[in-house]
Image (tube, rainbow, N blue to C red):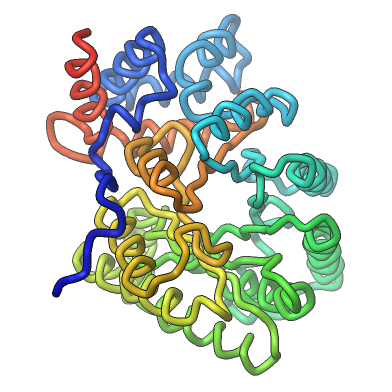
Length: 396
């Protein structure tokens, strides 16, 4: 006899569940936004104008962004703003992962500010049962040039050594606070030429703070040909040290940049040769984490419906409770609601990655979201197809 489906009503194309949190008015606004984002020329022009307008502080720019694209993809400009989003998500059994969205800073004061914001997010998460995780970026806590030098095994100056020591102190303070308050930390992955020192630092934090529960997670970009191997290597290191392993799995965010750099430098590209190769490694990573779920706490952080269904099927086949704390799913706020809300409705640990921060600081993040939605499919993005389906179902 063949195994039954993970749950009979687990249909990731169920738009009634996917958009149950949106009124007709909100759904119409979302449809308008995705139609705009489905136009590559409009996105290209809008992205350039947005960056220009923010840089030169043109009047009304922030007001326009605040009333259009910002609320689609961000929880608010501050942690306090995010509470409404957190509460609304939880009404639909969906958890929140908080992520302060400021990027690309190098001044020590700015780096300290990013750390302080993360500490505040941890405190807020501890007071919300629906916020189990806070995300952080190592590149938001140190000058990235130092990471690149260390990745290349260059000798760094005494000044850079002090700055790297400050990075260690910042991430240690973050992980220590999270450990004390029972919150977990997702550490984002970065470009391949920065990643080695990040991996080592995160592993040191795991060894220090993952003794009784998984406080610290590293992120593995499976579009990179060696990341499946690295994930298995890091799990074995944790086993040797007698600590638990935390793995967040993504496909990857810097494919074009990685390939262009490899071409310029005349080196082999670190990126998988085909989408199929990435999909294969991604699902192998899911298989490995579910197989070792007692010593690995993992997160399928993907917008790929097939991979989410694959993990759900594995959970079911092994008879693991859908809401086991070591097995999680998450998608970005404002995208792939069909995946998140249908998984949450079926009893899985499903969460939204909720980015927040001042509008001027999250513009790069917003531009990436619009570009992603432009390039998803040919004439119509999958998001827009699902929104249109739901509008027809409602008779709109």
